[in-house]
Every structure is written in C-alpha cells, then in structure tokens.
Image (tube, rainbow, N blue to C red; front, side):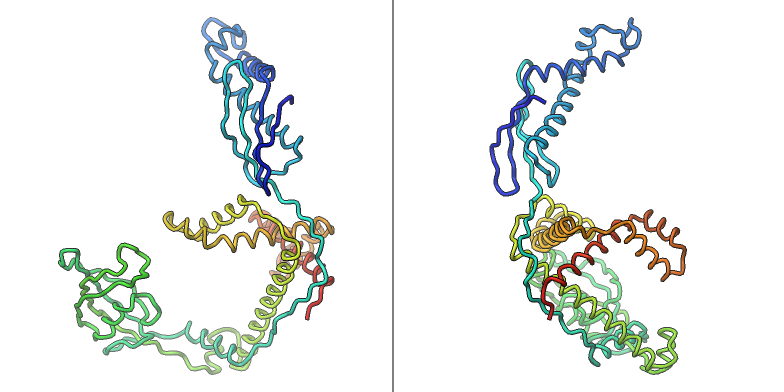
Length: 413
C-alpha cells in the first residue's frame, strides 16, 4: 500500500506515527466501496445491482465513504506494522484523523509495542531454598483450626466476652439527634473487627435483652469517608450471646473429621499436608528468587497496556466498586507489573530454549489427572478442554520446564 509514514515519537515501548494515504489510493478505495454498494443496492425503478453508479453514490454517499475509510485505516495499519516491523502489545489508537474530500487521508497511530527481551545473563546466581520442616506448633495450630471449625455455639445469659458471638439491634441518631428505627444485624464475633471498637464497648456492657444508649465516635479511618470522626448517639439492644465450645482432641474427634482410626492417624495426615504445603511454598519462593535475579540482571520495560489489563482483570474478579478502582489500580500496580515481568521472562526463555509444553506433555499430564480421578483420559481431556483448562495445563508444564532449566544453571543452597 502506497502510504507515507513519519515517526513522531519513539520512546521506550511507545510509538507515535503519522500516516498519510495519497488521494489516488483514497479514490480507489471509494470506487471499490461504491461498486460493492452498486452490486447490492435496491433502488426503485432498477433491478437489484443495476442502478447507475452516480445514483448509488448520491443515495449512499456517506455510507460509501465510511466503508472506504474503515478499509483504508485497516490496510494502512497492516502496512505500518509490516513496514516498521512492530509487534503491538495492546490495541493501537487512532488520533487526529482527517478525511476531507479530495485530500489525502491522514491520521496518527499510537502504538505500544512488545518489549524485545535480550536475556544475556540467566546463570551464575546463588539462591536459597527455605526450610520445609513442620514443627509441633504448626501442627497444633492446624488441629486447633479443625476444632474451631466444628465448635458448638451455646447461648449464655451473661455479658459477652471477646470471642463470643452476639446478635444486636442498632439504631442511630440523625443530624437532628433523633434516633431512627432499629436494624437487626447478622451475628458477629466480638474482637474480630466486625464492628467498630466503640460499638463493641457498648455490646460488652449489656446482658441479653438489655439496651445501652450513648454517643459513639466513628474511627478516623472508617471506610465511609462521610462518617469518619463523626459522633452519633447509638441505641444498642443485645438480643443474644453465644459462647463457643471446642470439641475434645481425641480419637472420637479424629473419626468425626475423616476416615481416621485414631488421633495419631489424624495428626500424621495433618503433618503430611502441612509438609506438602511447606514444600510447595518453598518451591514458589525459590522460583521467585530465580526470576528476581534474572530480571535484576536483565532490566527491561513492560507495556503499560498489559499492566492495566491485568489490574482490570483483578478488579473484575474481586468486584471492586467503581469509586475504589483508582486506588486499587495504584496499589495493585507493583503486583501487576511484577506478574507481567515474570510472564515475559518465562515466555522468552521457553521460546529461546525450546522448553514449551508439547502435545505429548499435555496428554501425559491429562493421563495423570485421569488416573487420580479414576476416570477415562479421553473424557477428562474433553472436560478440561470444555472448561478452558488445557491452556492452564500447558502454561504449568512450560513453567516447570523453565524453572528446571534455571535451577540446573544456578546454585540452589
């Protein structure tokens, strides 16, 4: 395509190009669009596709120009990418488009390109694998969590204590000092930060059935800015108090938790799970150390578009409210940028060293999953494919190969 390309900005990964399409090329595009319309146009007095070109242009002039414009911009974009050898990292943007009759088509193309990683150093690093030992304290904490999950809540007719579960009705005064209707809130546990400290103080003063009323100050860091630091009279009625009773840690508890013949068997299973988790955590930290060393030794820029896309994906996943998105995006940016760098390094090493997952690798992994499930591999493959999980398996295998390659070339203490 005969176009003129002028580079106006080329900094880092950002490219700003001015594109000019000659009048002759514009005219040819309009003629082609007009012929397409003429072949399909239905006008009174003419058979389909037989209306004169002049009448078709008069009737569909704006539509013809719009169709020609879309074709010209798309073709020009492809030409720019090929001629300038650019690999866009995100959707390019067109600015300052001018499409005047009898003049060249001109516009500016703003493109963010993929970084070209030249990983000159990927070996010679010294990293340390964290300890994987599981102590008795960790074991006891996990057993306590299991007991807590199966705790019984029994009503008590006395003032609540920290850790008790309470149900309350609250009514607050408005700006005129008039107390409104009471609202019953879902049960909350005292001391777990489910209510502001001043409200918890009210609750701790009452017995079930009693009402306490007095001014309460909202914290200066309260999530709702309009209520921060405000003082409002609050009427609190304590409806009930329940106290937690933990089951005994014995053989009966072990049988209740699962298919364990004794408490010792439960402890052994819990310890094994903790050790497996510790091993996975140690491997994850080791991998991150290796990546940090590679990234530090081979600095490169990351596309802003990729960072923004990752942030948007997490905001959608966590259903971040619209008013919180700017703050979330700013705070999450270091995490998103780190993830983008991580993915780029893994992708680059895998491509350069031929470490990408093969179809045979994926088939073997699916067979392992099928064996664990006691299912047919073909059925498992079809299920994973339908759920869009095969790509996830492919990435996992590729990462394993890349980190195996890195560990072989660096010192792991």
